[in-house]
Image 1: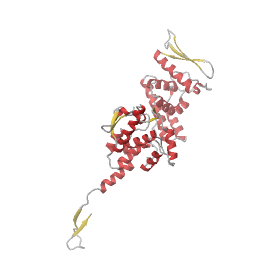
Image 2: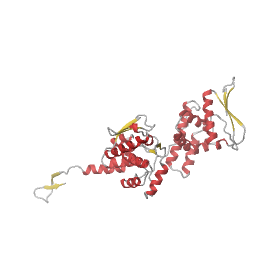
Image 3: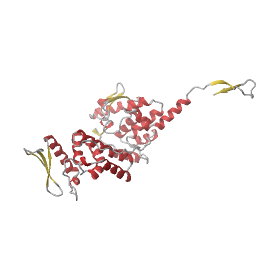
Length: 366
């Protein structure tokens, strides 16, 4: 691969690479050196991870600098997502690129988008997945319009409703069973996830450090997920029994010199997928429980115990509307308990016009 400059051209910068299938050199011109460097980086990524995207097709070849595929890689280059986010993003976009990847973004029409939606809905994938794929495509085309590759974004079809699958969070007895057969680092995940309501994953729990924990005040300072730019961090009180355990954990971690709350023999843990699956099997739990459901367990138990939804949302660093949507079944129980807690009303009703009682009064006690 190489970047070359040829003076006197409207697009003097060019990126060259050898197609792994044809063994021929291909070229893509750019107006600025910065754009050429971005394209060079993305082509290197494709050569390493998506070699099939260079395979020649019978009618079309990847050559246009404004193809949907090229624009998508330029978009990723500018956004500089994390490796994990990039992997998830490209996985969502890959089916769309298989259909429209070689099309110029300037030629994609409203009917193309309607056809794409119908194609996805006719397959076996869930509507929420169709929504995710079309949403990513819409974001990409909006970015293309912002930087001037296209004049305007074609009108998108109405996206399918976000009817997310509802998961039943682990019960206290299930959590006890999981902890009884888990390694120390997984016990910490289960207890902190279920009793602090943090996001169980690399965005919050797995990057938690002891410097984020104030054992004296009994609070955890949670650095929020990147999507919560309005709330970069939040303080969460630590339940007294959990606080005692965390103080013991801290003493042991100081002895081995690790800074991470969740670690395996001192090393930072980046994934608990395998350990979690093993713990469920050993605990005899056959239904599906995700690590993220620990956070759902926190919300469910807190709301069921009578904690108001706004407070629960603040602790979790989330929107109260989300809690109302996902935990309405628990909120209904809270509403029932509220009306049943009202005081009894004792009164005497005047039974005007009735001849059944000479006094015309009816004694009623509620």
